[in-house]
Image 1 (cartoon, rainbow, N blue to C red):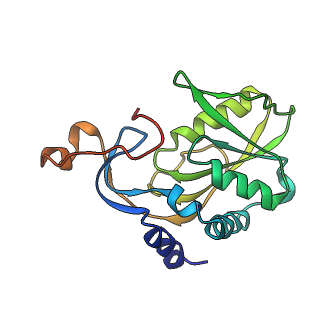
Image 2 (cartoon, rainbow, N blue to C red; image 1 turned 135 degrees about the vertical axis):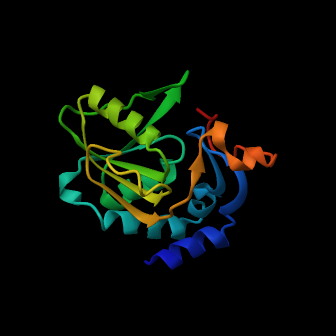
Length: 192
């Protein structure tokens, strides 16, 4: 699948938005990707998961983990196609945790799956939880990388299906705020 096909999925789903958005990282942007709208189509989810799986060594993975909530659908589909157990981390009182009775066997090798990455903060928090539980994150994959220039974001190999260099701004230096354009927060959690 090529970049044009993947972007068309987002456009056809009404998931490539233009405006003034507050991202979950707290940064501002004129473009927003609502992956949930793309992934609600099971054919899209299956195709995007297959694209990500093509970038990993399935034999080197014991489990798949995603940070909630954005990574849940694509992570579950990647795990299903790989035939591996799936679990997720989630925030409770602002702290990323492993809950719901999930456990990670000591030394288990985990693939971390996310839908959209900008700063990578949720993924790093998820990886920290995996390590605290005795697991070993071995790779990160994401459907979309919004900030491809952010090298060294993770201490494990990283791959993405789609790269979009979308400019983001600190809230205090956002040109959209300076213009008086109202900002909206369409994501899954409050801004950082």
